[in-house]
Image 1 (cartoon, rainbow, N blue to C red):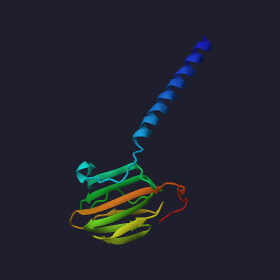
Image 2: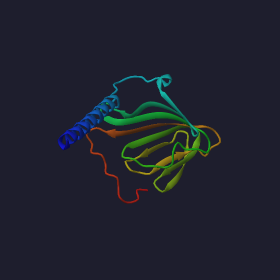
Image 3: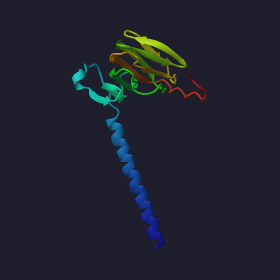
Image 4: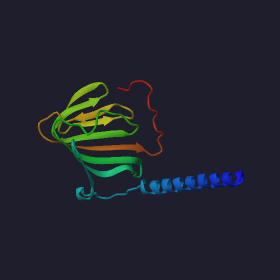
Length: 161
């Protein structure tokens, strides 16, 4: 009886492990989209609506190109008084370009006026953010990515503001 119970437990554990591994493999094959030269019309983006405004996603965190991986690009219409999320940091490099409107950049421990035509570059693990402090909708484009063949930078232990 004990051997039968033991064998049953081992078989159940093996089956669960196999199912989880299969799900992970399926997810990774879906989430590793690689793109080549192409045009992505705005009409083909995935639209996300929030109380902060609208985001049209052109590529997603799992997208890769010849030299990048985890590339995420989007165009955001940000309503007055809002930000997509609070200032944050991550391992990816990021560029944000304001095409319309005004607000405040957060970069490290600084607050900097942001206006149409301004570009922010945030290096890995640098605190950054953007808030629409204007009276009209702000539009900005962002591009976040990791470089292929470059070691992922370690998250600093101390304040990286």
